[in-house]
Length: 542
Image (tube, rainbow, N blue to C red):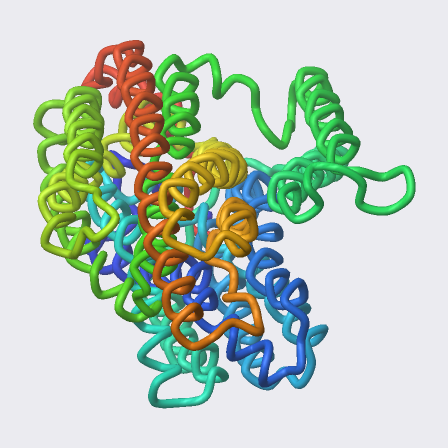
């Protein structure tokens, strides 16, 4: 512990190289959250798995990743950001190899859970390192790179996954991570400084148990709620009781943290910083609304318009490119003007883009009709990720960087999971209603004996987000007519439901924009100077 590391006495003279290395692992962890989605049918056939088993291969990663972020963020404060990052990369790489070698659904699920652990270990260390290796005047640009990956990786996942499946085995979706992970770990050990607080910490094990159990209950309940129709899982255990137990454990966790004055897992002093408290609310509400954009758009393109997963990915790829470019530029603007105002402008533009998209959506809308709205949304998305992260972390004591990044990341993950669950319920309910209405308009073109069946089948399609198959035993002419009317009704009903949902998302984003006005003034040189005096000697090489 010989060399002081702080924002004023930087940990490295090559901070951008260090950040680029850390962002490789960050990119892989986000990519693997979405890349498996396109492989679901292939996994069902190759592993002789049920649909529910394969869904858990997707959801198990998200569950483990989400519930551990608070703990792994704090572990970075205790053991060092580089050390946790490298451990995370190694775990993620080993897990990727095991995923590729899996011979059964159970083996693949276990390997995916280990992947989630690796992703959770490395993820918070990126944000913590930005606070440590960059002075305040450069953090906007650094968070711009962070925002670029946040916006780009989830969209690239389905495109890359579709390409791999078209030319290679599904196993290469995972194997491709192995050489990248090995190289990244070597680069991190070679070029990344070892950063941690100079004082001795201990881990709040009771806090870890309460936070992990509570978040597991909440995240599991939200992910699985729709599958169990928000009712009974087994015996007396149901989704409401799981959610209730999770919330109760999180309340106990907060009370426990209030008692832990010296070494809490989640220092409540973080929320004494106005920007951090406001930023977590904004991040939660923002993610709640933002998640709906791609959720309903992807369903619309695939289910209502008949696009393949790869074609859908290519349609939204320009949006991702604009988000990536916008994030880099928004980071520079945040350094100059402060994240608050850039963030408010970005969220306002995002709501406008949604309304433009709503105005252009029709049952037969093609890519060119959606392009104006998607262009605005892409630019606006780029103007939100980096400023939001910068504004949230502005004024956070670097000694608590790991805890702060873990809490803020968890808050957004929960917002995203809750948004997906709520949107799934609302979209299904509204879709069933609109589909029934659209089917009733078209039922008169069918023989009278088929009309009631057609209306009921169309309404039931809202529960599955896809048209039901044509009944057996019809003549070829009746089959073609039934199929065409079913597709027309579904496309029209989905377009109507989608417009309503996107208007709701726009309203949520306007609410988040209003919360942004609560951000305090930007911390400038005086804050940095006082922080320097407080932190002198507290950050050093391992």
